[in-house]
Length: 328
Ligand SMILES: Cc1cc2nc3c(=O)[nH]c(=O)nc-3n(C[C@H](O)[C@H](O)[C@H](O)COP(=O)(O)O)c2cc1C
Image 1 (cartoon, rainbow, N blue to C red):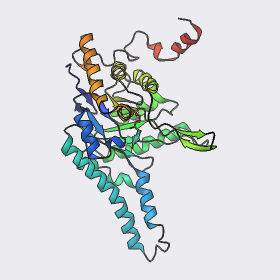
Image 2 (spheres, rainbow, N blue to C red; image 1 turned 135 degrees about the vertical axis):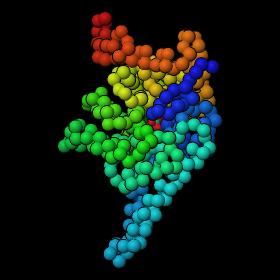
Image 3 (cartoon, helix red, strand yellow; image 1 turned 180 degrees about the vertical axis):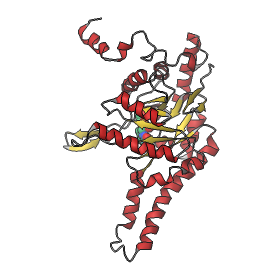
Image 4 (cartoon, rainbow, N blue to C red; image 1 turned 30 degrees about the vertical axis):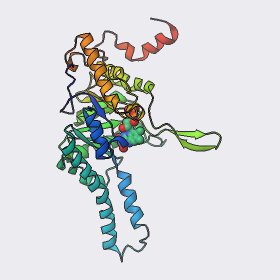
């Protein structure tokens, strides 16, 4: 088998296939299945800042007279918060002890709330890195793109000041000046960008005339977005890019490495096809490398990124013009 090792966030991974944050990674049993199937690393299910806030609020909702119950109020608010945090830290610690592969903790946050107080505890219990899943829905007409980007940067600056383990940011693609924004994150000290998160997709049931949830799992075609942006940005950023969404096959892993990714994160493929997907991806990658005469991932990583290809325009608009007009 070819050498599939890769460096991501300064961590040495046996191979570039990482199991992304999801219900596959919320319990030790699932994490052990991923490790046994040969994953390069795992990202634990995110702890959500809302989860903590909501639970605190729900427990103290009935206490309308806080002045006479101040101690109890404080106790409930804090013990509720600690319950989730302690459970999460326990999972990080157990995963680290049991798996033998890098364990990346994950926080889903949008504000500089209470969770920042415990950001450094992830590293204390052994997390190798922290992935921040952040999404401010740009749905308010009064708030500019620059304002939203600044919110990301302010929060990430605080996180980076608080933790010493590498920090990756998992992003969506709702940024107008995407390359510039990602460069700003790179310069801030973020060690990796996970491109892109796949958000909840609301849908409408026309018979019931009601809202419904869209598919929670991705389809293969969705990978074209991460492929394009990995290729566009990989040569321009110092930090690593980890591709995500729609990566279902070994071929897709190879394409993202050729575009310049350090690693890929997968989740839907395992939910659809089982843990054997990890073995299949590694075998496809290894066989392809042997066929093409590559010994290591660095022999071909980024070969087709925008900065390395002779035809950088294929990653941008001209390809579209060519497709619709036939002009070559
Ligand atoms: C059931 C489910 C739960 C998820 N939970 C999280 C989560 O807690 N945090 C997170 O960052 N991403 C979460 N995700 C998103 C995945 O990590 C991943 O980004 C997304 O599914 C796209 O990758 P894929 O196409 O390989 O599935 C979840 C996805 C699914 C399907």
